[in-house]
Length: 126
Image (cartoon, rainbow, N blue to C red; front, side, top):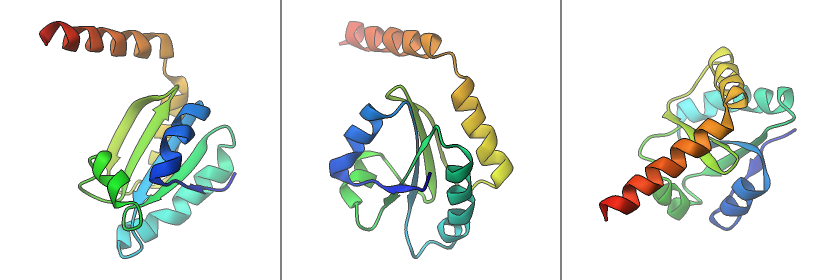
């Protein structure tokens, strides 16, 4: 599966409509981003059960700001609509595969329970 371009308009539906989404926040002037692109593209071909998206931070400045992107490249992973990984910096293919495998291996019942507990804690504090 090739990577898909994600925009401010498509971000929400992309996360909602796919079980696992990996997002690369990048810019064409960023040399680490350019060097990471072939690794990311290769991973998208290898992991057909994962949607790989790219956000051009120059063209999608509002989305980058909403995602609190302060350094590029930044990689984010969502599973069942939950942000489960976020890290700036380019990864090599082994590191990227490790992240993808870890995301796939998550016990989502535990993750959803932790999210619910944190939301309940936040609501109680208000």
